[in-house]
Length: 150
Image (cartoon, rainbow, N blue to C red):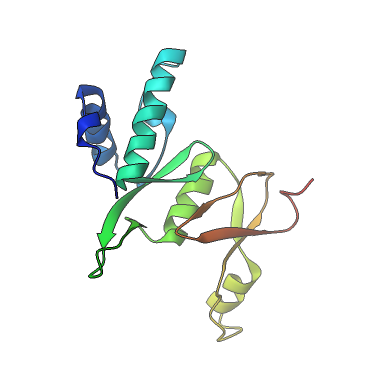
């Protein structure tokens, strides 16, 4: 990831400390600041973009971010990985957004012992409307039930 040390300042260091002390791995912009002025939001945008470039956080949905860590490979390539598993992050994101949900049919059948086929995708059945998209690390949450469609 990019080393943007010349962009570090007291504001970004404060945000870095706030993010590291958050008990949950999923957070929103409101968890970082209470000031909704235009100037503060622009500063927050710049800081969050810098953190995403550094690999400290990953944007998973509109206004939601997850803690991440850069992972270096032997061939000098690096990638950003979530601190928690994608499924756990997705569940926390849905709960944080106030979306009512339950496990998808494939996951339910596997958990109930009706099938031995392990679900390959993370699917949830929505009980309330949600029009967004939750994705990270090249994975998506798939929705059943048609509640999120037009």
